[in-house]
Image 1 (cartoon, helix red, strand yellow):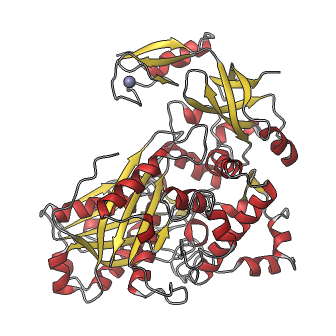
Image 2: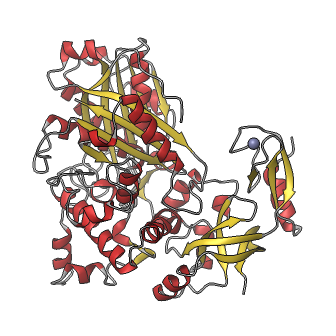
Image 3: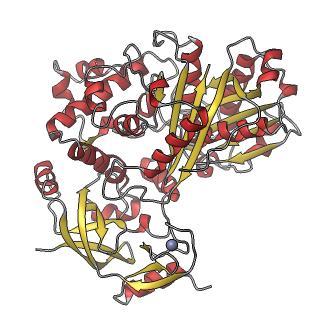
Amino acid sequence: MESMVTRFYKAVSNGKIYGVKCRKCGHFTFPPKAGCMKCGAHDMEWKLISGEGKLQFFSSGNLPPMKFAKYHPYAYGAVELKEGPCFFTCIEGLDVSNVEALEAQNAKMPMKVKAKIKRMADLDIVIFKVEK
Amino acid sequence: MAYVGNLKEKPVITGVGCTKFGSVLTTPEIKGLGFQELVCTAAFEAMDDSGIDPKDIDAFYIGSMLSHSSHLYSHNTQMADWLGLHLKPAIHFATACSTTNTGAGLAAMSIASGKFRNVLVIGCDILSSAATDNPTIRKPTDPTTLWYWTDFGVDQAYGYHHAYDVATAYGGLPTLGYAKKHHIKMSKMDEAMREIHRTVKLHASRNKKAYVQTTFEQDAKKAGFKDDAEFWTSRKNPFLAWPARARSVLNTVDGASAYIISSESQAKQFCDKEPISIEGFHWSASNYPWYGKDPTDWAIDNTTFETAMKMAGITAKDIDYLSVHDCMQIYHLIESEICGYFKKGEAWKAVMEGRTRYDGDKPMNTSGGKHGKGHAFSASAGADFYEAVKQMRGEAKGRQIKDAPEVSVVHNHGYGMHSAVTVLKR
Ligand SMILES: [Zn+2]
C-alpha cells in the first residue's frame, strides 16, 4: 500500500491538492484518509479539490506550536470546502493586528476563500486566501 | 443513535482518592514526589475511603498521558509492587484527558462481566517537570515543550502541520460561535465569560485540593483594581485567542486521582459509605477537528450524553449536579446545553445569575474545574469523579450543594478529541 500521507504532500508540492471520495457512498474526505467518515467503507478515489471554500470563523492565538512560532501572529480559521468537509488552517489576507479588526471581519462571515499552497515550517501545506 | 448496551450487574464506586493538584517542584503538599508516590497517595486514599482490604482488589487500571514527563511506560508493571498489588492483573490505558472517566466504564464492564469483584482505577500526570536519568532529579518543563508533547494527540498526519493553533480552535472559535449563534454582543459575551470565571475561582477557593486558592475578587484587589470588571478587561488578562482570555483557560498541574469500583454485593461487605452506582456511560472518538462550521455543535458530545443518559434511564431533568470538561471555560455553556441541563442559548444567562455556583439551583464543576482545581491530564477526570462522589455523599465541606445530589453526570474530553460521559446515582 502506498503511503497516502506521502502522496498527499508530494502532490501539494507539485501544485495539486487532493481529497478522497468514497466509492460506496460518495462522501468526500479532506485531507485524504483510508476510511470513509460517513459509511466506514475503505474504497476511496483520489479527487482534486476545487480549492473553493467559505471561511466560517477565524481568530489568532498567542500559543502557536514551536514550529509555527516564527509566523505568529497569523490568522487561523475554519474553511468549509465546496466539496463539504471543514478544514482548519492558516488564512491569508486578514488583519489580525487588533481585536477591533478581528471582530469587524468575523461579522462579515462567511467569506469566500481560495486554496493556496505555501511552504510553512519546511513543509508545503494547504492554506486559504481571502478572495477580494 | 449509538448502541446503548446494559450491564448485567450494578457496579458501584466504593472509594475515591485524589492528591492536592499543583506542582511537585513548589506545592508544599506534593513537593518532591515522583510518579510512583503521587499514584500511591491517591490510590491509598481511595482504598482507605472504601474500607477494602487491598487483598480483595482483583485488578487495577492505570492511566497516564505524557510518557515524556513521567519517563516511564508499562505503568502497570512498575506500579504493581508500589501499590501492594503484586501479581494482580493490571493494564495501562489512556484516552488522554478523559482517561479516568473512560476508566469507570472499563471497570464497570469488568465488574458486570463477573470476572473481577473490585477494580482500582488510577490516573496520574506530572506536567510541571520531567523525570531524568537520575530518579532523584526532575527538570522543569517550559510551556512550549509541554505543548509540543501534548500536541502529539492532535492529527499528526495533517491537522497539526497546517498551522495548528490550539487557543483558537479550542477557545476562540467556540466562544465566538456561541456568541454568534445566540446573538450575544461580544462585550456581553466577555461579561458572561468573566462570571463563569468568578464561579470557577469561588469553587477553587473552597477546595483545599485545588491548585488555585484565591477568589477572582481577591486577585483583582491584589492587582490593584477596585473594580473587578476592569481587571477582567485589563492587560493583566489578555486574549489568548480572541475572544477567549487567559483566565478562561486551564492551568496545567501535577496530580493523581483514583477510585475503586466494586460489585454491589461486594460493597455491602466492606464499605460503610453510601455506594455510588455507575448507571450509564458512553464514549466517542473523533480525529481533529471535531467540529465544522458551527463551533458549538459537537457530535462527539451529542452522542455520549444521549447514549449514557439513555443507558442510565434518565433525562436532563434528573441531573442534580453536572461536571463538564472545562479546559476552556466556554465549555460550561456549550456542554450544559448539549446535555439539556440548560435550554439552548440559556446557559450564559444562568451563569450571570450565579445559578451554577455550589449554592445555586443548577450547580456545576464545584471543585474549581480545570483552571481552579487545575488540569493534570489523565488524573483530571478522576478528580471530577472525586468531587461528584463527595458531593453525593454530603462530604464536600465548604462548598457542599444544599441537597446532596442524587444523580450526577460527569463529562470529560480527551485531547484530539475523545468524549466520555458517566452517569452516577446514589
Ligand atoms: Zn462512504
